[in-house]
Amino acid sequence: MDSKDTLIIEELRKDGRASIKDISKITGIRPSTVHQRIQRLLRDGTIEKFTIKTSDDAIGEPFTAFLLIKGNTQKYLPSRIVTDPHVKEVFGVTGEYDLLLKLKFRDVKEFNDYIIAFRQEHPQIQATLTMVGTAKIKEEV
Image (cartoon, rainbow, N blue to C red):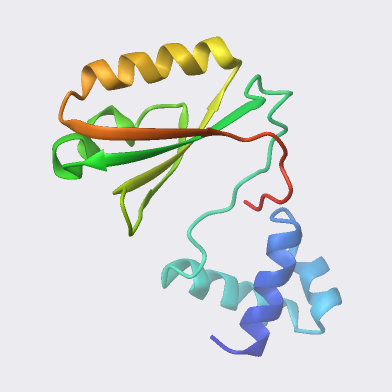
């Protein structure tokens, strides 16, 4: 990746729907070069996908929680965790816990019901620690 790739990626991060013409104008890189580089960045996996950023309130998920999990991750990671619509991100972490999940819910009741069901479905989990997001300071897509 070189400085031209970096400029193109910066513009796509600002607006994933930006046209090749607009990116070319902003970066000073020829449109054909912008197109070729985007295609290469997609092919080599540097750009994984184009996506949108939604309003949590507008889509009915204003409640954000984080769940730390301790236990044998091999037994429950392939389960509903990675396909569950409430689970937005999953990280393996170092330290006392094994996984960190970012979760989104409609409200505290939905969150509470989820946590109770989750613990019942996964008895091999040794411990969980939940944290509720009270303010979104920064979030990137």
